[in-house]
Amino acid sequence: MVMSLSCRRTMPAAAASAAVLAIGTANPPSFFPQEKYADWYFRVTGRDHLTELKAKMKRVCEKSGIKKRHFHLTEQLLADHPDFIDRAQPSLDARVDITATAVPELAAAAARKAIAEWGRPAEDITHLVVATSSGGMMAGADVRLAALLGLRPDVRRTLLFFQGCSAGSAALRVAKDMAEIGGAGARVLVACAELTSPVFRGIEENRLDGDGNTLITQSLFGDGAGHVAPIERPIFYMASAMQATIPGTEHVVGGQIRQGGVEYHISRELPSLVGEHIGRCLADAIAPLGIDIAGGGDGGWNDMFWAVHPGGRAILDSVEARFGLAPEKLAASRRVLGEFGNMTSATVIFVLDELRRAGGEDGCEWGVAVSFGPGITVETMVLRAVQ
Image (tube, rainbow, N blue to C red; front, top):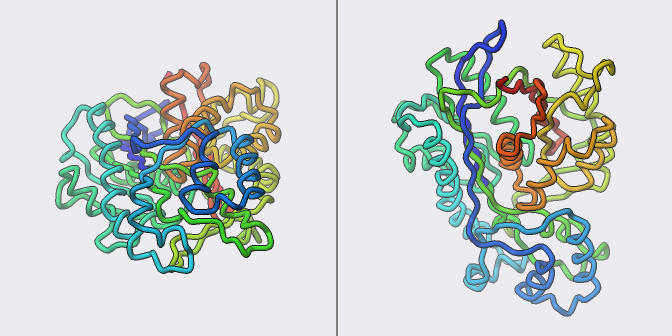
């Protein structure tokens, strides 16, 4: 997945803040309907004899809220790399080689759309922020993306690596700081690029727990590209941004780079912990602005528009219940989850794009973008719609 963003210093109301100026998205052309994925997965991994686990994956897929997912990984690629299926075989070198080319190319596909919407030359980009959990090369995806886009040799590059689903919002936060420090001439391009090829693997047959983490990760994640770039008419102002870590939750979401690829673990505690702590995170992000969103007098949290990272259906349900949100408030997040699955860091950009295309702000002046990552890390940004 890829996301790019450009910000410039601008003046909403009385205070200067960065702004999202254009958005572009991209996905690999290959995709699978979610209802057929379990049959395909167990066939290509040689696990068709594990009928109970296949039935379990089908139930997970049915309840996921996902209709289809896009993948760079193809059946031919798996045939060329059978080591991707068997975790006992070292496959990291091949996975890194694939992502070294595919990640920046996917990032560039999304970035070019946003730059075209912006309407100015790519050479006018002053800063580049790239976030990815896919790869492991030096020079990294930031250098390769800059070359593909024809950015200036003196563009200021920042690479955020292996931060998971919260990296999209973290990249926006870093870009906001750069744009505001850089002044009126700053144009920051943010690219978040992720592929599932580093995490693809077969079921481990001898696991007593049925290899539940593999079932979840193989049923949820997809590839995509989202890009935000600068036109000179803002879409959203970025009013404030905060990061918080829920103490003692390192075991809930995480990942390790192994010889057999990247292994993620996601605990069933995640949705409930998000629901328990997100209220404090949002209140802290809103407090410096001096606005009373949750005061209850004017509809409370339903007076905002929402761009929530759809890490899974249960997470969206937990956020909706915690704030008493009307169903339409998370419609953009649920549509993105349905069409693309969880695209890790780029997903929140897809949600912002869906909001602006569908007019999902519903006339609300203020909104929030929220992402969740390993830690548990909660990235919160308060947005102000262009009125």
